[in-house]
Amino acid sequence: ATVSRAGILFINEADIGWRPMVESWVSLREDAAERNHLPGMFDKYIESLQEMTRRGYKEVTPCLIINKVSTIMFMMEGLLAKVPSDQKTQEVIENYFQFASVWAFGGPQVQDKQTDFRHKFSEDFMGGFVNKYPKEGSVFDYYYDHTSNEYIHWSTKVPVYQPIEIGSKPTETPFTSVSVSTVDSIRMTFIIDILARNHKYAMLVGTAGTGKTLLIKEYLRSLDKDADGLMSNTITMSYYTDSLKLQGEIELPIDKRAGRMFGPPATKHMVYFIDDMNLPYIETYGTQNSIALLTQLMAHGSIFDRSDLGFRKEIVDVQYLAAMNPTSGSFTVCERAQRHFATFNASMPGTEDLKTIYESIFDGHLNGFASSVQALCTPIVETTLALHKMIQDRFLPSAIKFTYNWNMRELANVFQGMCLSKAGAYTSPMHLCRLWTHECFRVFSDRLVTEVEIEIVRDFILEATKKNPALKDLGADMVAEPNVFTNFANSAQGDFLPITDAPALKKVMDAKLTEYNETYAMMDLVLFDMAMFHVARISRIIMNPGGNAMLIGVGGSGK
Image (cartoon, rainbow, N blue to C red):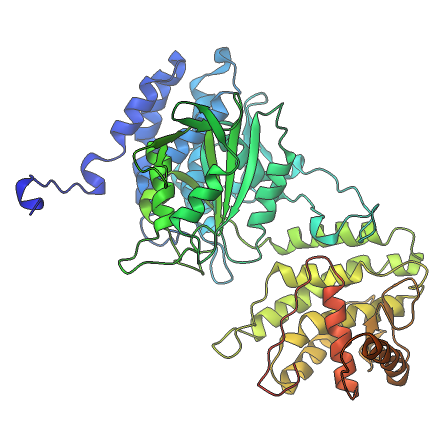
């Protein structure tokens, strides 16, 4: 009935387009050089880039053209703020504009096992536009520096890793908190920093285990409340996060300022990090009410008090960073929410980056070990990466084998186990290699469903070690059974050591069982070999901080 009384105009994306938004933005720029040069650059690049990426490209989540144009505007605000006004020549502004355009249009492009659309974008951009990017590598490998007026490789910004003691003692750092800077993490942090300091919103989109959450949390940890004026708060979404729960989490860290205004303490800004943004449940007609509330807050800056609906709260000085996995939850969020965020794809680091990360950590850990053991650092890292690749290509997920998802977390788990070794107990290369095969079996084989597949992994381990000159002579002895390591069987200090044989392990476990039965209700167990090995496996998982185990099996299998 209401519709019949109103004149309805349907406006699609192309009718008004992005130009009015750009014109208003340019007219508000204070610097005359910017007002003169910027309009021509939008004319020169935007439509050509839109045409270039229209077909043959795949974005990690759908981004409207107005979204990409606003990303360029947000980045230009941050980049040009660092340039003194007497240096704002057409060339400097254009180089920064190219840098922003590359990330606005190329940032959301997918990089996965099958295709690398960022590489394709780089080639097309180099061929289609006059630019000063170096010919080596891709356009994403460089940033523009106005002081030297040239493009510099991101690797020059990567700090050298300082080894730290890894462990659970008070003086040591838990493995999960160790962070190694790579080219990828440095450039993503740089771009997030430009946007966040300018009070704009950024979003990282990528599959599980690509380090989105770690990267953003690491960035937020580096902020100083007083020097940067930025405070942070993390909101983790789940299937059950509805608008009421989200509103509660948004209101929790902010206070009333005056009248209807709410916000962080005066002169400060609150950065909300919204993790797993697309997980909330989808209602009958495809909406997600928590994301609808967030959209209202981003667009209008106010929400209603839930107990007194007549009271409208204005939320000021807040901004958002988000992360989401495009293969879970609702896959995408509605474009009204999406358009507020500068969106970038977070992909699995390349082999070189992974090698840098784990070599830095493992090499730092092996300081103080015998030199013959230290020499194994690079061979073990290279062989682990090769093995991970073989397993990733061979064992693909299916409805029954739903645990066959292999990402960076598996590599982290292998090296978390390797970092439990102590210099006094691991004196020969064979000791360390036995621990390495044990960790590979635990991380990879324990997920597999059939005996045949477990044998395949054993063959893969032998095959991968044969290809590495430093490991090939150790061969069959490395995988000899039983290969079980525990922190309770033969070490009073709780060191992670191999068991000598199954009877020795049985003796320890029987003693523990008797001790348990004296304190709690009687548990009548017969500890056969497989049961003991399973207990050792579970113990290995839960001894690590953040170690969670899940047992999958048919009913009655003794879980």
